[in-house]
Image (tube, rainbow over all chains, first blue to last red; front, side):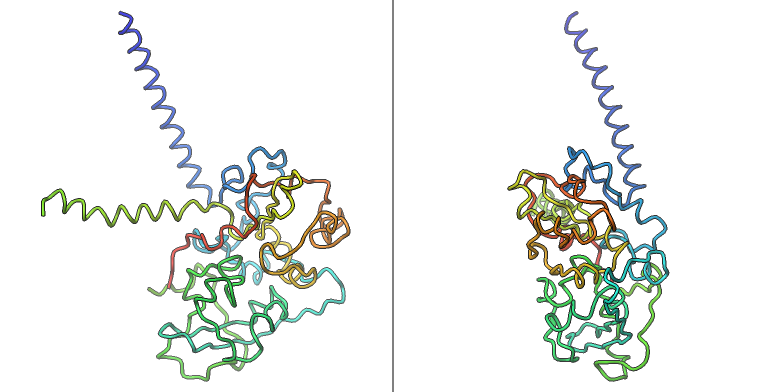
Amino acid sequence: MIVGRISRAGLVSLVGMALLALSLSSGAEEGKKKERWKRFENDGLHDPGNPAIGELQWPGDAFEGFPMDNPDTGNQVDWVRALESGVIVPRTNLFPDTHIEVLDLDIIMDQTSTMPYVRFPHRAHTQWLDCSNCHDHLFVKKSGANPVNMFAILSGEYCGRCHGAVAFPLTECRRCHSVERNSFRGNFGAQEGPGRVYPPVMEQEVVN
Amino acid sequence: MGIRQIAASRLWGPLMAVALLLVALPSRAEYADVVLNKYAEKNGMRPVIFPHWFHRIRFRCKVCHFELGFEMRAGSNDITMGKIIDGQYCGMCHNNEIAWSVEHCDRCHSGRPGLKTRIYGGHETSGPSRW
């Protein structure tokens, strides 16, 4: 009799636990579908016990209406288009006498082994960065004079100072290696005229 | 070779893939979050989490990395509260004029105990290779 009672109670609690687990998992799944960005409480970095955690802005709120990048690629934001389209208007300077320079000059880099050539756009970079952020401590101002290679980049040198850390990650090979070797007919190095203008990341052609 | 062995060998690949995925996925920090913990925990505070994404909505890279002189390498800037209160580094904006001031300790000192100084979410990013 006692055994029967226990087993019935056990059965009830088992069913209860199963229902709870089901509701939790479906809830979590729903949350996962809706939320592209991790909540601070479970991002593995923020301390959930921090009293100010609720005062911090969550990326999902901040990025509302931004042009997107692919899921899981960097911040999942197309930062260059966010800036160009005026969705964000980040300040260029704090001091009134700071010289702001934007250079519209593409460089074709041909030392890419069998990979497509790299077309480096100064414009997208100088809209964010100052010349001195790269010149001359990462790159000298002479095309072909920098021994850039993927090993160095992957270990955080040259382009890897930012790409793979804060700018779009190094998994996006073709975003830099964008010039087909067999169809390019011009000269390597600095290109004449304004730099190439690219469509938003999500509208760019994916080459497999 | 027995059927069981063949099944085992066929499963090996997918199992390894799943195992790799499980190893690769735990990166959850937002891309380019920087943890600063050179002095924080030694002085009884939580490590600092600097969110690049939040700041680049409001400022171009050049403001901090050119005008303010932040070296572009996590851990290579010797940032202390004394310097911040003196108006250097974060203190250039976090002074109650451009951004909220240093009395909101927990907004920056918000990391889990034991975090190492470095950039998070970067090389661990699980972005698919599209090329």
